[in-house]
Image (tube, rainbow, N blue to C red; front, side, top):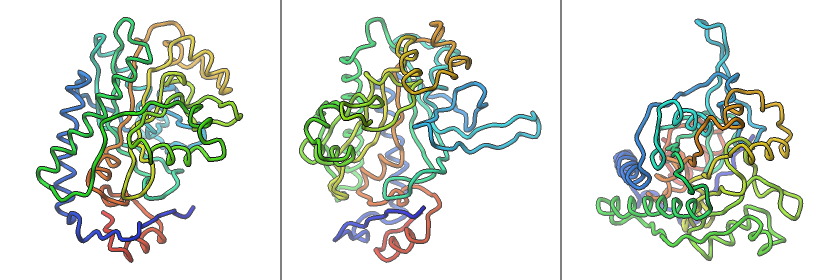
Length: 338
């Protein structure tokens, strides 16, 4: 699979941060954003797994087509899977660690997504702040979801303000004003466009948005995007997206949502043709009401760094493996891949 790297016309990386300045700035961004995120959502940092036992049902299967990286463990005689994300593991951790309503956890998540299509925004290496919080009574609502989105957007924008104190010449500006729109509303607004084109058209005008209700089929008979049926409630989820001036496109930084309860899990497993998962331990604990009601998401670390530092390629802020076409295009444009 070849990459789809695009270098915007007029991009001159030599007038941006040097490689070592970039490394220093990445460290600062991560420290600053973690502080704001943890304070805003009342989160405690915890350790997280790099791999899971597939028999638990805890690994995130994303759109259901991506192949997990698996390996055998000599000492146990079993097989493990490198995580795709910690969407399900976090909810189990909240239960096992005894978190109270209104509090939660966050952690560094590192994953390998070997089937990812390589381009400016996508790599086979994924790094996120994965977070999850226990819902208080009456908080399993659209209003609570929206208020949490506003807090996360504020944390991103405050991080940019802080980092520009050290690097005032960064050509980046973001809007704190969040526009909330559903995937069906996007389809109604732009019926002739693809889902990605709809996001671009909407974000070009609104700059910052939360695109809601992802996973179910739209009136047209297609999905805006895929979502696993067993973590987000498809009626109470969404993506936080900023307009990226440099790339001229919608730029997703987070997928998040209120998690499935017994009712929504039951409905979504059937819709997705995944009824076989009902017997897995994680799913049993939701269906019988053992696990707490939660909300959570993943926030891309490299995505945030790329956006705030005005970089055009994710390889400028993370180390990964790229195809020859990507390396040649970046070298010709003076774009340094770490």
